[in-house]
Image (cartoon, rainbow, N blue to C red):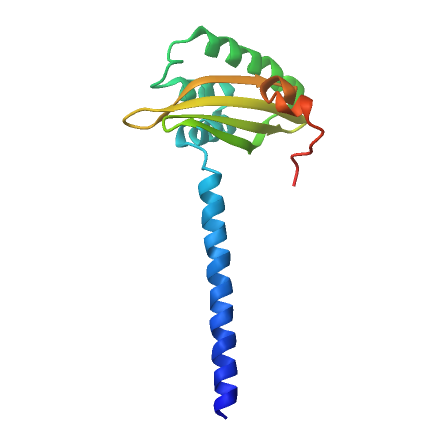
Length: 157
């Protein structure tokens, strides 16, 4: 009888230990793949509801791009592009690279009804929040993610 109790307890401890290790591994993975800053998330949410122009306005607020002509030209480009690729659907974070404690580059695949665009955002952490310092978009992934051209690697899971 004692032997059975000891075996059950050891199995229970082993199972709890495995679950704890899995939880720890997931926590470490979450730290190594930081979440998308709210300024970027907010822009994509606005894009889904109101269109590219309003998303670009959200991305430029509070940062280096505020009142930038680059943003105006990109939003004009997207108004024309919307006719070709359809409505915005979603985005996928391809990769995030920390430059330092206050800077980060994020790479995205932006999904539409008839195709994808690829984006690169340089974000900077101010005292209040993350702001967009620069952004680039292209229909060719290698234009914003140069390593794609040099690697024969599929980033799809």
